Amino acid sequence: MWLKKGVFSLVVFALISPAAWADITITQLANDGAIISDGTTRVMIDGMVVEPYSVYGGLPENAAAMFKKASGPYAGIDLALASHRHHEHNQPFFACEFLKNSKDTVFVSSSQVLGLMREKCRKLVTTDPRIREIDPQYGEPQVFEVKGAKVTVFLLSHGVFKYATIQNYGHLIEIGGMTVLHIGDAEVSPEDFQTAGLDQVKVDVALIPFGFFRQGPGTAIVQQYMDAPVKIAIHIPPDEMDEIKADIGENFPAVTILEPTLKEMSVSSALQ
Ligand SMILES: [Zn+2]
Ligand SMILES: [Zn+2]
Image (cartoon, rainbow, N blue to C red; front, side, top):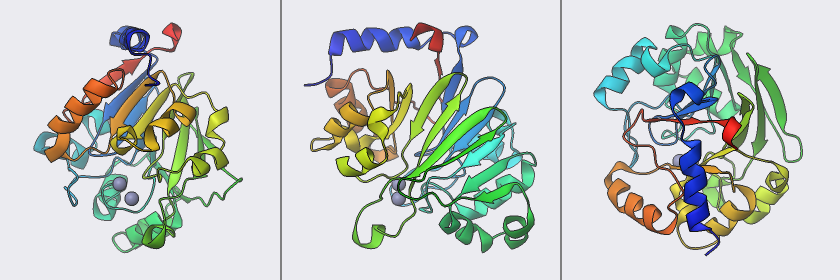
């Protein structure tokens, strides 16, 4: 087992600091969604998901109400991102609704994501300068900055066959002096993580789909490419939450699961 259990638990415990010390906070949204904030700038990734899709959860009623009004944790989102077009990551109708209500939010994503949204809010997608399309390629990540948050977007394969053509983006979000990694639905493939250069990046917080903690190559990929001091398991179907929580708690006790939805965690860089 590669996890140094005792030491690791201690470090993570120390990093979960009271909000007053915090440099950034991570708020869990539906499924793969999160808001990352340094107290000034708020970045949301895969957060425009409201309804359940397939086995994956939507928002509870109170959270859906706040989403609709762009209030509570959904207030003041400076930048919204979507990893790819699958509906447990971005729901076109709700994305359009949110971007109409949250008038200062810049949205950056792929042509596939924007293509589906165009069917729901053509004018917004085609004319609003807040909506920006990016097209990173292998070996050519795209980097941009919004209100002091620096974002690097790069390709990570979603898989083969029908998934081969999905534009799935990994994101490195530098905010509050820390680096947060989100990988969308990246395939459990070490080659792709290597190509993306993730062995060279110091990540402070990694948001990792729970499947990587199952047996197989996933745990080795976590160790080599996503071995951040803070690891948060995401993309957990609500019906399997108890089972997965028990499983990860036993085998990877240093890995955090933020539940219920809207649970927040503070991470302090001063303690790293
Ligand atoms: Zn997914
Ligand atoms: Zn997907």
